[in-house]
Image 1 (cartoon, rainbow, N blue to C red):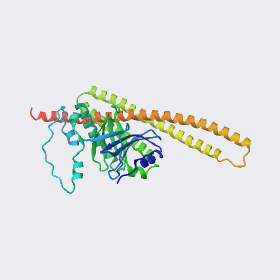
Image 2: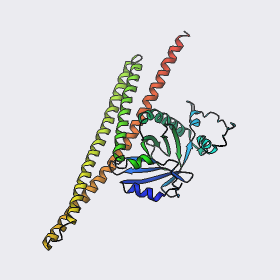
Image 3: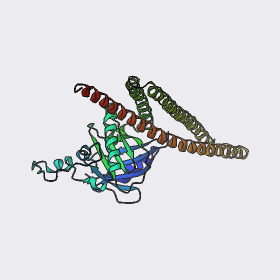
Image 4: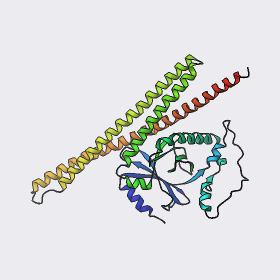
Length: 354
């Protein structure tokens, strides 16, 4: 059944969200990139397949292609892409051909079209999303990581998909994206913006905690080999922790100021309404006084809206930098812990041959 995209757009915009981009597959809307005007968060609205919103191509609409997860598994640690299994014959159930074809990524992009450096980053992002999926396993909300024109996301069944976003121009910085499906979006319209902000802050806490765990693991490994290396690791870890604390503190301060502006905006808005609904028995002098007061309040309201817009710009920039910093540090420390542990185990194994 086909649904009206214009009605969905009206629902989104009338509830304080700005549409930034549409992502489609086979002409149907798959994700909508939304911007929250409350705290300046960007999130993706997922459109389940049972809701068919057909989309016409324009400058804000981008086609999506699956990146086959098995292709990512075939990338070894030395930068060599293993032979793909092109001669396999699929056994299809004739009663369920469409579903099986979708499961086997009939819309997938060939990894030959992706550079090796990008493939390694996609693989790392895939593994990172796989680790983070446990943090939202019991939530209706899911998450993904986007960088360049690639996006790895958690589905509602907690499996992971990676996508190529055709012609989508984005920064090389990683973005942590919260994903909400259409049904949850509709049911929690009045709470969505607060929910997304809460989830974002909670994930920052998880990443901070994991940073401490991974740093402690590295310190213990270094201590047995080099005290100077251990001291250097502690120093670096403290600097990173301070930077993360500074990011979170600044974001929280900006969000508090935004809340103050929102309350002031509501108060002034109510004052204007009260002035506009004056008594019909008011005389000329009262009307003039009311118009003067209304003009003064509107000037104050314009000032507040201007400040709020500036705060939203600061919030967006801070969150982009924070996302990129948290995700990269988490990935580096996790990889270092795994590789160093493997090296130590390998040295222990070598002793058996001495």
